[in-house]
Amino acid sequence: VKKIALLTGGGDCPGLNAVIRAVTRTAIMKYGYEVIGYKFGYRGLYNNETIPLTLETVSGILHRGGTILYSSNKDNLFDYAVEEDGKIVKKDVSDVAIENLKKEGVDVLVVIGGDGTLTSARDFARKGVNVIGVPKTIDNDLAATDLTFGFYSAVDVATEALDRLHTTAESHQRVMILEVMGRNAGWIALHAGIAGSADVILIPEIPYDINRIVQKIKERARMGKFFTNIVIAEGARPKDGEVVVSKIVEDSPDPVRLGGIGNKLARELEQLIDTHEIRSTVLGHTQRGGNTSTYDRILSTRFGVAAVELINEGKFGNMVCLKGDTISYENLEKVIGHIKTVDPNGHLVQVAKSIGISFGE
Ligand code: F6P
View (cartoon, rainbow, N blue to C red):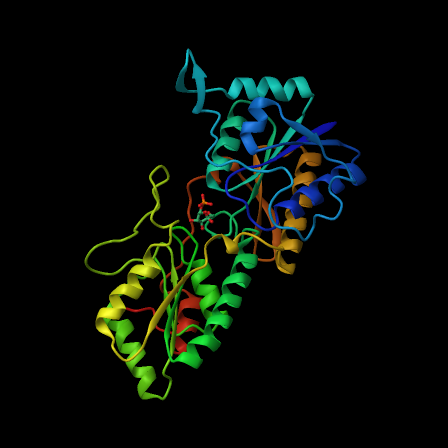
């Protein structure tokens, strides 16, 4: 191996720059490889938009969220929108990408992304490209790894938001609802809810009954606590009745991303409670921006170094992952499409229940 290339695909996430830095530094300093980056994810690979990655270009980026390589969403080169005779048609343009890699003299492609981006990585591996995957998402919903980088940074932001809502809720004796991200998994809500002392945690894995939430608010009032903090995952849904947001549909205008379920819950609670004012906050993309948490800086650095070690050992077609406290790897064929959600009977849910947090069951 002489030359490696990196790209970042899908939604951004704190820790991407830390991975880029760790891969680049290890590749150059330990193994003497040349490193380049493709800009804008797979789109840049198709358009051959490269930038050199050197010790200088990756200097000072460890803590910074976002990605110096930029990203693009849903750019699947195996089903890519191109213009032909004035019309937009979908085509498999993966051979153009493979040709570009050859022209650049790239021996290995390191792909940093979530499920969608890694699915294409697997498909390139199937076509004989030397690929290494690095798992990324704030949602922490990839089954092959115990943790994805970015998750704890998002949890930190959500926890801080709950801390801030706590004092204002108490002052005004209000019910505060905080909607957090997580797609179809409740990891961010569960962790932030415990860390930020929420009274109610609502997650997709445990459909809620609004009457139980009302009960909790009243119970707290009887105990002299005239405020309640609720954290709700964007994918959460009620037990019965209309499913507001049961799944995130990739290609439709997405109510989740516009802040759906938290505001709906607020409106419904308002009909059922006249003792408290209710306010709703949608945390949105603040969870993905800003600086990377210390935990994620370390995990990203471990993943980046491990990716280059796999390259050095010639173990292509794999994704680095965390198992317990050990960095390991898994074949890309096995990691795709396996989403990890919260176990409703799992330890953390039990811990939350033990300390009196309601899941609205
Ligand atoms: O997968 C990460 C994530 O931030 C989800 O939590 C959220 O549902 C989605 O991406 C938002 O996507 P976009 O940035 O395209 O609005």
